[in-house]
Image 1 (tube, each protein chain N blue to C red):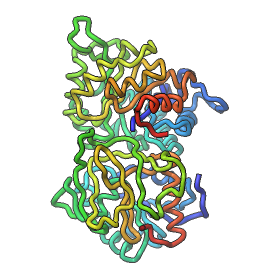
Image 2: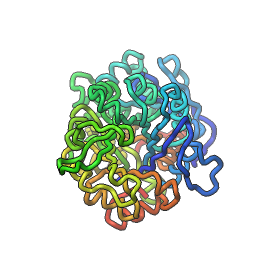
Image 3: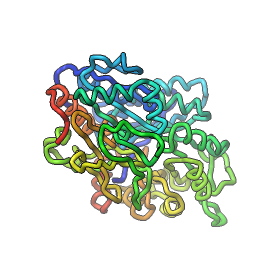
Length: 251
Length: 218
């Protein structure tokens, strides 16, 4: 079954960006929102910690502990994890998986060490990619698009998997925020070149887009933030549309 | 949510090969009294035992042994104490695993653990529908497919010697054993504690069967 994954941006332990649930007590509380998404049929959740400073790490540990106590679907923590100790702390607090982005590019060996120590299945490598102007594939960017790495996304995806990534979270920077649909070419290139599950991210706008990421991009899961938070679609509506297009989902 | 009578007393085995928090919280939510046990003496007098597990088979068996749990599990199983293995915890109940050929398993269910051979991606990460053996105490009494759909993360699968020990199957390109049991011992390849209401309901049924003092087999 294809997974539908809402992504929550968290800053200093609070959800940023509006989240549109009827009858919600505290729209900024990640745990309350996570429980709502569980009840709404989300298959998994991603918390992206955008807290800038390392000193705020205790806040995310507290969030992980509370989520693990109250939410009974798998969740991934991404953002700001730099060392094996960072990873160990988040997993020990109850996260099912961790996602590495900048740290994996800067220290690819970290992926290997983390996979050996904690198991491939809980190491997600997140790749933010943008189509190169010269047509030579996709450039990998860090820091929300501010840092060009010189890495090509399909090649980097293959290397990340070789080093032990159990899953890839692929975000198209060309499409992110445009609601023009997932970058099918990017997804297909990466899914065809690798052997682990790929989560499609960036660009979801219409209900049809979600199934396309699977039928054309061969993604194993679809992730979205704003269409869910803004109340444009519910998880149930997305799943119903995917099922209509022949994609197996949990309903 | 299933909310039965208080109890039973669950010994949740801590041998440093899993995150216990989610399993413990799920059981507590269902009314169980959870005791995290790092050695057999801490499990004395419990009504049932939950054996979670994430990681490699060989390392897990070594740690189980280091904590003194291998003998305890065999004794408790022989005495009819309900034991529930989760994920790697299910695999450890078997005789041996292809993942760590030199390390014997607990041998509480006859058979071996093999690599999941499929044309689909491995590890199998995600939700799959389980077909339960008729009459299994773990099977949902009714409800739609969502009530039988659970979250899996695994690369290996159990192959019981006696097909009668298979309690449920799922499909990931190829059919595989999703739940198995023999006597008072049973196990789940998926993570009920991560399977939303369907998973909690299943744990609730297992706790109910413990309360009823019956063996969880078909």
